[in-house]
Length: 246
Image (cartoon, rainbow, N blue to C red; front, side):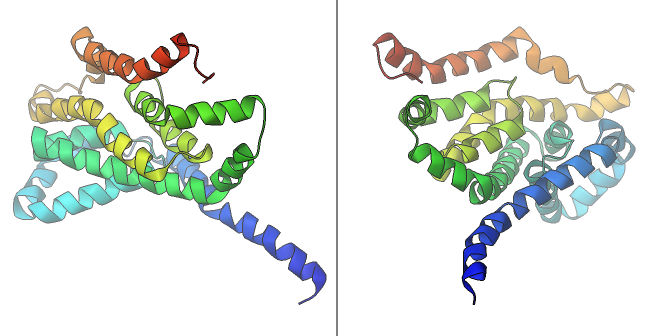
């Protein structure tokens, strides 16, 4: 191998690390353009009898198929995550539906986290480790309040789910902390969407569509915001005591 080839190899490897994330972004873009009308409540309403019949005949298989589809939706940031969550309640009830939704969403989030971490996240995290000044303070603050920040990303409804998956991977968050905070942090929202799905049959029977704006009702958003405040409390206390800048 020549010296030129030897010098090019590390760079080629670095570029290769970006391929999986680029593939995810391409699939996400194609999905946004082609699947917008496919993964919808209209599709669910039109196929509900077939789904219910398949569930009654092949319950375990449907659970596995549903998890696989949901993982793909999250991992590739495809449209339809809210529809999938509601469908979980429609097919499996509140308890099992919530559990299935949380497991599938967490697995999909873990997949895209690892893809992003293996690609640009590794280089960016290494750069932050050796940086100085404000970027170094930001990294130190994130490490000190990593759990609180991760919970906030999951609990604040205004933060898109894919952002909460990608951002931690890019700034060097520990994978285990990301995994368990995701699993716990999405539970409140999962319960709400699954609960909507439990009564979906009656909604369809009346010729109506599910009202996902329910999550913004005071009795729903209030407790979620309370959890946000609880997650932010350690950060606020540290700042009030004159701790490090976050």
